[in-house]
Length: 222
Length: 119
Ligand code: SF4
Ligand code: SF4
Image (cartoon, rainbow over all chains, first blue to last red; front, side):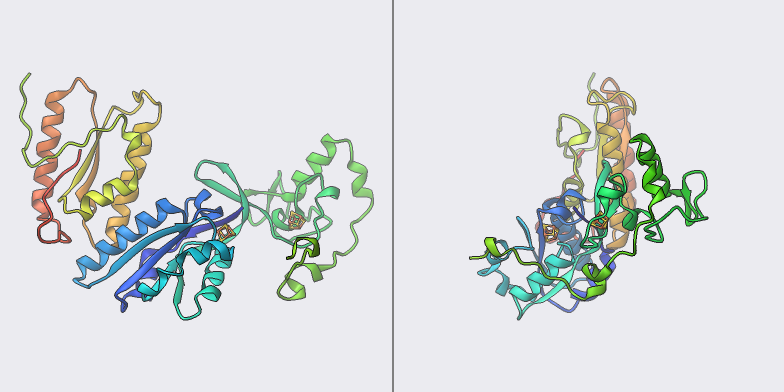
């Protein structure tokens, strides 16, 4: 899922300090799972903002809502009758959700309440790590199910590099070398011959290098 | 055993301190409490294993959050004691009340909101 972390409250205050009424809008999708932007975080941020402004003797009404998802119009539409009551929305969805909110309510000021970080997994409660960079043509079949794009710091297609030491990456002793992981995994599967054939250069056009991406599934369209 | 603790304290009973969420602590303050303390069992003695550890982390989180919104972190605290320690509870209640009294009234208290403290 998409991982995010709450923005520092000072940053949010800076954006809304001259307004009178803001709606804090959470998303019950990815950002709720990584405890950054679900209903719980909406309640916490709204309460903190109310107290902050009360302390400053500044009038500020803070509304609370959390949508099923902010990346689908049907859920964003639920705010149609409500959003006009506010001066701005602080959206706790990922960057995609914030932008879709902006597109849906184009007269509203929409501010991000989280920093969107990566696509990843829950390692343990409270710990998340990156697994995929949405490169657009998945290589996992040839790398033992471990992604060299997101787990090798240099995104090498043929690793490891000389910076790999005792299973760790040269950028940080805490970071596993993605290619060491791939090696161990392929060894376990008896597929080390994979290393005899170098992977040809990847066509990065399907990744961000090709510009903003779009996808259509004809049979799903109405 | 008849023990007295400050009458300004309002006790909110929870099955385990693990039930105390960040928002509960914030709401108590937002609604006008001068301070809140969580009274948990001794660490290592939680019937649900980690309830009091979780509560401690949430209390720490709230204390940090308070600093960022201009409220004194000491308005929120975590104490650990066993359920058999009535006198200790009374003592902590007095200690916390004193600490909060030194900080003065909750600056965000809106007029008319009743004074309360949750334990
Ligand atoms: S808006 Fe973002 S965070 Fe929310 S469900 Fe969609 S992708 Fe996930
Ligand atoms: S190869 Fe590409 S699509 Fe597959 S996991 Fe890695 S970044 Fe994601």
